[in-house]
Image 1 (spheres, rainbow, N blue to C red):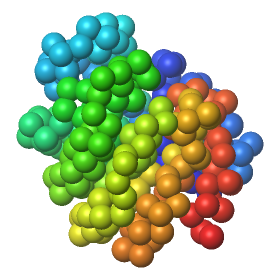
Image 2 (cartoon, one colour):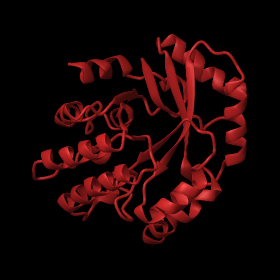
Image 3 (tube, helix red, strand yellow):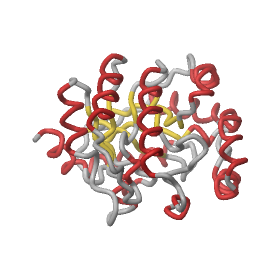
Length: 259
């Protein structure tokens, strides 16, 4: 079993911190873990958030609290150190990158030839709207239009040629908002884009762990069915932000994607 989406941001870039994730992976009977950081943890990516920060005091305050706190060069040095060790599970390193169409060139420039194993592209903003940050931010938002833009931008993410996988492809449902129309056509377009670009989809337990009353575990069954129809690989992941969440609900999600 794989846990393909694990954040290490809460600890130092040192081997004992990585060992905590490895030990939990062994406990959870995982064969592979994929460790990453949010791109916004590194100052180099800060320009990507100028517009959404200007549009929202909430986002600006969040960014000032959370972003730019880590060193990209030190992260890459950690990757090299880990690769020199011998662990009982396979370890890959990457980045989870917020997708903004207008910053594709910057993402490409900052991630090229860095020696990372994978780049995971994720939708955390629809335009300037931080849809998954706080439920109250949805007040006054047109849900249908937001869903349309979310999936249209997800297809652009897949067609950008930047990423190896897409993170939590339908996390737009996090706070329980539902489109009034069928999403089948959007699921099809997204699956087709992922397939033609050789990308995988992230079957993720993070949204359910965060909002168990409004977010189902992993992707919607119809989306899983359509991804499988198009032979898009699906990788299970916890979206853990601490060692104790590594492997969370992985066994259950394996059953969901193999039924």
